Length: 78
Image 1 (cartoon, rainbow, N blue to C red):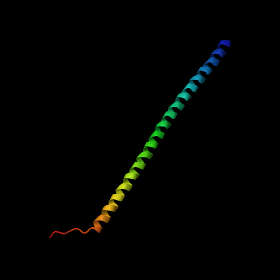
Image 2: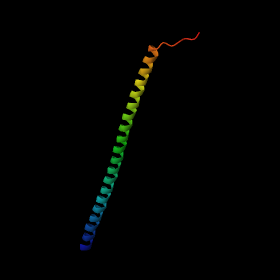
Image 3: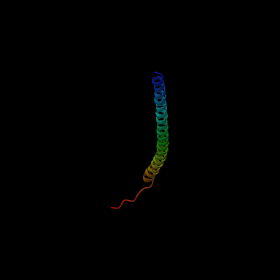
Image 4: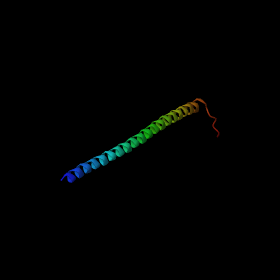
């Protein structure tokens, strides 16, 4: 009976140890995934800022061109 009790205690300890190792492995996987998502979010924010700057520059160019077109009379060839 003592052997069975010892085996049961050891088996429970092994199962507990395996469970804890599995939990640590999953936590590490989730931390890695969180770091990847954070990096992607940073890249997306940087891309948005860059695109906003380009759009603002394009709007300024269009505004300048449209003003220039209406200010300067163009000769008309008949």
